[in-house]
Image 1 (cartoon, rainbow, N blue to C red):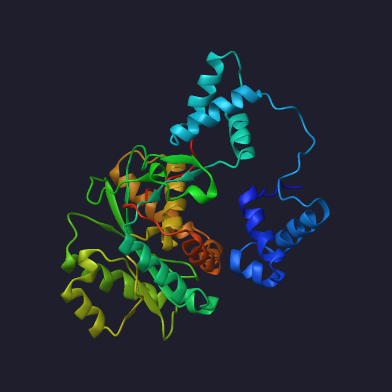
Image 2 (image 1 turned 45 degrees about the vertical axis):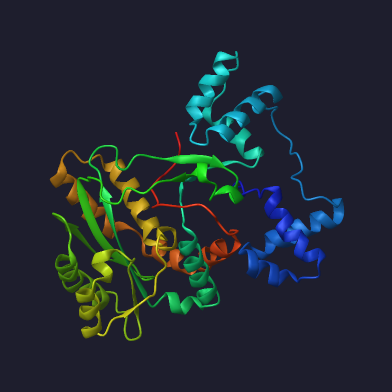
Length: 348
């Protein structure tokens, strides 16, 4: 039987507290985005034991002593970007030899997991994101199926956009020490423009040279519109792109108006709300496995792997889109400033 995800105490409390206040199961499920079976199991456990902490399970004794666990917890609290190998080395110097898997298990028992760094946000960004989430929280899944999502990304030949993760609790994603600053115009070996819908991926285009408004509109004409036809979007579809200057230029807006394209209003500094970020991550993992040798090979591999991404992956990203709205609304007001998201995978 596959291992199931174990929720931390904070999430369990968020399930039990509304129940104690008289809220029904279905309302709690809708509000938190958790499975109904999970909510029911946690509430039944609370009714029986009057506690929400995770009960210890049988198994082999932990190889890390309480003192060693305290040491690595202090390390990751002070330096969230610490890698598992760093912690293995720290314990080895104290006479304890453990694996990176043991480190991961210990940190997870203390409510920490390895997560991508989150963008920093200014107050105006926070308010715009909250408004977007509240406006679209109750949109039916069918509405998101009418959206063509678009984005650009950089693909590096070697290193493929290095991993940058932090150890944190779920509620600490916007703590300043767990965030990463933006680098808007760094160098990159290949810049790709792509789009997708709930049905499958659209066209992928390699952009060469510095992209301006004119080049962007040409990409839309030669890639977006053919993708819409190929994906059979029909009538009433929406186009999503971010608030980059070339996207919001007067000439671009006029082009979109003449083509009768309806554009989804988008909050700035919100790459985490664009499910295409997940597809970029999927693509980069696939590229890393292929190990392209040069730029020409890199472009070829990108095009090949992009069309191989299963339609089910695209559909799942759209089906679960409401969870992104719930996550934005559940984050408390943020009073510090922010940046752009990095594409990351698993911390080594």
